Length: 159
Length: 159
Length: 110
Length: 110
Ligand SMILES: Nc1ncnc2c1ncn2[C@@H]1O[C@H](COP(=O)(O)OP(=O)(O)O)[C@@H](O)[C@H]1O
Ligand SMILES: Nc1ncnc2c1ncn2[C@@H]1O[C@H](COP(=O)(O)OP(=O)(O)O)[C@@H](O)[C@H]1O
Image (tube, rainbow over all chains, first blue to last red; front, side):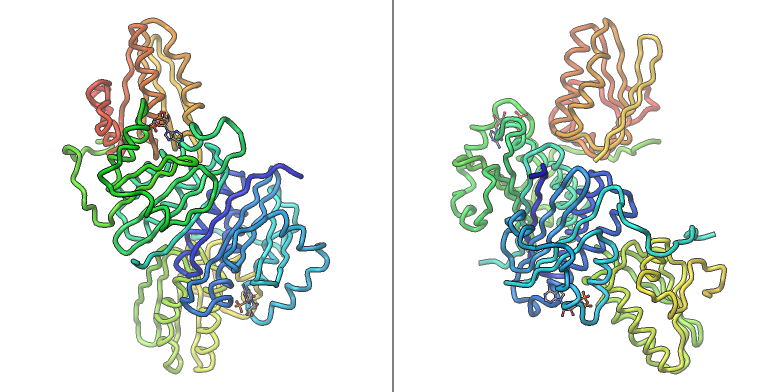
């Protein structure tokens, strides 16, 4: 087993709290050495997963919980977002996710919105598990082992 | 029972992680409406408690965990820091803490350092529980129902 | 987490400044603030996003909804002064090809 | 979480600039960087804390340790340009009465 640090957060499934998750994540990702751009990408990915838990998994104000697990490795960050409200057995759940190629569950879920699409585009590996609540697994390498989507021109903020 | 939101974090008892707890806390406290000064006070209090868990509760790199619970109310923030590594039953633990006046455990612990002294000075209520690991309970009111320590002159950062 | 909205009215045109983070918490407030602007015929709404520090699919959803409604009322939506970050998001989602988006106010919003 | 340390040597005096957060993670590095400065006799160490954005008991401990050792070697420790926040901490802990602390470099560190 690779060495990793594991940080877990549990919080009420409310939109108010997603900003707090982003702050925590940005602390974790910055101290790991992710670039500004990558930290911003990670913030979007984790927010999208939390937003889905808040909006789809629970009817409004039902008292549901979201659990977010951060697996911190030397060369990558793993994030799991689950709306079952239970703590992760991180490694067991990872094992259950099965091989990457069979990630058809993502397509299955992605009916209309942009959320899961953004997660898939911004992260290096994404898997969705769909029993007893939804668990989204996301992983991003530290040194960006991932091609660019299109060319982004070096456009200044203002002239 | 008062209505509250409860946010919990669990992380390895390492000095590296205390900054992440501060970030999470500052997100929570700012969105509750605490002033800049109060947020900074809360950051010190939670850091001191985490530092103690890291330095005293575990021998170096023993793989221990710290659990931090944030109880968010309309008018106050409660924080618990425990180095047993187990999740809180927040309300049960609060009940076990007993009346505020009997907080002699704090004095009992405070042998040499400034950490617990700062926690006590900066927070409105502090209790320490000392079975199966140390749990520090800290509470701060939103509108500062607490007297000032001495007069702080309005000294500018630079002239 | 804060978001501020400022509106400047000028005949048929409205210039909106948005500041802060747009996410699942703040997007409903933004939608509410913008929605009535799309009711009139031929309205031009320009949104300056220079000070938006965070945006995700919830915010994109607000702009797409506004865009559709303005279009169906013969109006126009312009998004201006996007940061590189925000531009990247509109690019990734393909919205850059559909909507009137520019990174630089000097172009007059085109 | 970052901390930067910059030292300027001038005969028997050293001026140290510290930047960032001083906590249980960064304090050991700070102690290590400052310790050798207190070895010489009659050394004057001035530490500019203007850019220190966070400080708790771990950092106070470093300064107290350095202060004691400099004193026992007939040296001097000055802490200068403290923000209100940092000043408050030295005040609360009573260190303000023991150590040479000032909030304003114009006073020459007194
Ligand atoms: N945590 C979840 N629980 C239940 N359903 C989900 C969850 N996450 C995603 N989904 C389903 O997947 C769909 C696509 O999600 P997404 O791409 O984020 O777009 P949107 O949320 O805008 O619909 C959702 O509409 C929903 O039906
Ligand atoms: N979480 C903890 N586990 C074990 N002992 C603790 C814990 N927190 C505090 N203590 C004890 O209380 C003492 C005083 O703590 P503190 O005031 O923070 O000062 P310092 O940590 O600098 O010694 C510590 O030296 C330690 O013996």
